[in-house]
Each structure stands twice: as structure tokens, then as C-alpha cells.
Picture 1 (cartoon, rainbow, N blue to C red):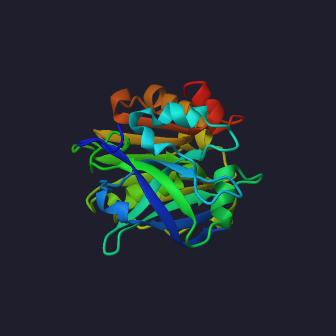
Picture 2: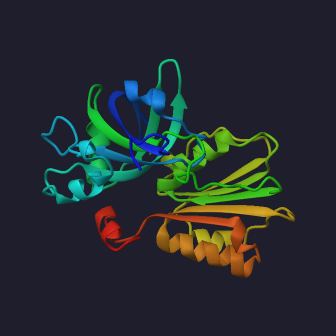
Length: 270
């Protein structure tokens, strides 16, 4: 899976080049490193596994030298030694020089990764498990060519993915998006295809809002939903059962689950 010839994913040793606050709840961290010449992605909602160090560590502890046995080796390390692993979305890939951006949602109370992002400075080191092949299974957004309407929904954790999807879409696509944020200060400017409508839901109920929404006529809609897993499941039922959209044209991704950490979700196999 990692660092093998022809493998779609590999490890990248990177360092922070700069940080920028996008909104009160969103910070963008830029990373560079020689390894990025091997990094390839089509973008959209490209998922990455990011490993950050604990406070007091100079670099994250990931047993990359174990090859495909890294996972068990990482699990066997003491919890306060092994790197913190979290899933994030690639926000942007640039060449000349090679850099990537990752947007972090800041929480209160802060989790270990968002706390790291808030205090990150140039030179801080991370390890990334990401794509070495542009078209890979960690891209979940798969709008069919015949899609005449693209519907997007996400909460704040899915905002970086929605932003990346909107930027990657060709200008001919018709898009309707709903984005749930906690505060009006988290509403940001997005680059979109011309026929795009974005509905920012600030403290509103997404399911009730979508139930009353009037969608444009479309013969072949495609739906992408990501965020808190309970909300994602409810919205998938809405689109499939209440609006009659073919379930094969609905992509749904649970980024987090209310009341559970990512470690607890991983242990539960979710």
C-alpha cells in the first residue's frame, strides 16, 4: 500500500511553510517537501491521512520503515508517543515550487490536530499518507458525465472539500450547495461555476431546510453529502426516499460522529 512500486498511496515527509486564518474557525496550513514531486491528485474531495506530533515532540512518530506493517507498528506504540492521525481534505496542490494546502477546522475544546494547526509555525514537521496516483479511491466525488444537476451538502468539516470540488468542476456544471456553519463569520467567498447557488445555513436545521428547498428540474441529478455521520445518513434518506434520487447517484461520507473521537470511530470500524 505504501512506498511500493506502482502503489496508489505513499508516505510524504513535509514541513510547514506558512499558515493563514481563513475565518475565525478555519486555518489554512501550507506544506512543502521534496517528496511532493511524487504527489499526484485530481483534487475534488481528495482525502489524506495527516500525522502530527504531540506537544514536545520535534516530529511525528510513524514507523514508515516497516513498509506495509506500519499500521500495526504505529498501533503498538504508546498512545502518548505515536503520532496523532487525522483525516483531512487536500485543499490545493501547486507546482513550482511543490506545495499543498490543508484547511483545519478549529474546535472548542480543541482536538489534538486542530490544536496543532492553531499553533503551527514554519518548519514544523508532519507526515502525510497521500496519493501517488492522480485518480485514486480516496477521491469520493464521482459525478457522472450525464449529471445535469450537482447537489452538495456539508457541515463546517466538509467546507474545504466543497470548496475544492467547486473549484475543480468545469464551468458548464449546474450546482446547488448547502453549507452548514456555526457563525456568520465563517461564511467565506468561494470560486464556483457560473450556474451555482450556495445556501449558507447558520444555525439552521439542514434537513428541514432541504425539505422545503425547490430544486431545478433535472433528469440525472448527482448528490454529494459529507459531514457529521448522523446528519449525512438523514440527508441521504431524504434524497433517496423523499426526492426519489437513484441511490447509486448519491455519494455520502461521514467525516465525524457526534460524541466520538476519530480514535473511537476507528476502533468501532467506522
